[in-house]
Image (cartoon, rainbow, N blue to C red; front, side, top):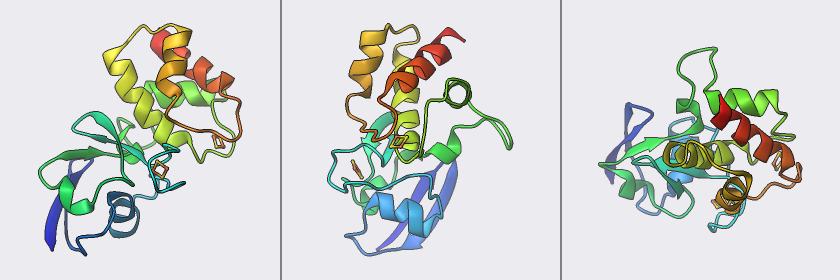
Length: 152
Ligand code: FES
Ligand code: FES
C-alpha cells in the first residue's frame, strides 16, 4: 500500500506491506532509530511515540493506520539542533538513564504526562511511569528527572 505518514512535521511517502508495524516503519523506512523495540507486544514501553499528542505503543499499530495522524518520536522533542527539551535536559542533569534503551519511550510518555500534569507529585510520576520498564536504573533517578523538569 502507498501511504504517507507525518512524523515530526515531515511527510514520509512509502509503499509498504500492510502488516508493517509502525515501530519498524519509523526505524527502517524513516531512519528514526530513536524509537526502540523491546518486547514487540505492548508491555515494555520502549517503542512509545506520541500519536496526536497521546502516548501510544508503536509496536501495536500498523504503519498504514498512522495515515492522517500526527506522529512524534524522540527525534522531534528537541526545539532545535544541538538543543534539548526541558525534560531531556533534566534527564541529563539528574542522571535519569544508564544504558538508555528505555529512555526514548519514557521521554515520550513523560512529555505527554507533564503536558497534562505540569506540577505532579512523586506518586503521580511513579504511576505514570508504570507502563515503561527500565532494567537499569531502579527508577529513582528517572523520577527525580521528571520532578526536576516539572520544577523548571
Ligand atoms: Fe512496544 Fe515493548 S516494544 S511495548
Ligand atoms: Fe537501561 Fe532503562 S536505562 S533500560
